[in-house]
Image: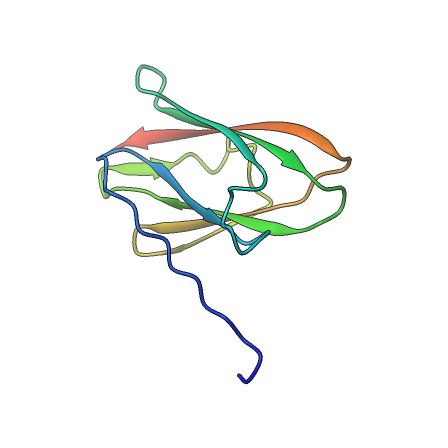
Length: 108
């Protein structure tokens, strides 16, 4: 539409599930993401971020074909949608402040 913008995010593929972007701000995570940690032994991706109370947005990940998010144990999700290897996790915090979310993956 007339007043729409589109942002692109370019990342080198690492072969593991990785953070791509958020829909919270046009800086795609630079404002709120504090830390991202991949634990290879546990097959878990942990994202630490500053949340705004009751502000819904999505965290976007790239998930290689050999991994599948564990949707039963995924504390990041209210809802997961996937298009190819891109997964969007809808999230909303109950209060302002630091949130730590961990997503467990299964290997195919």
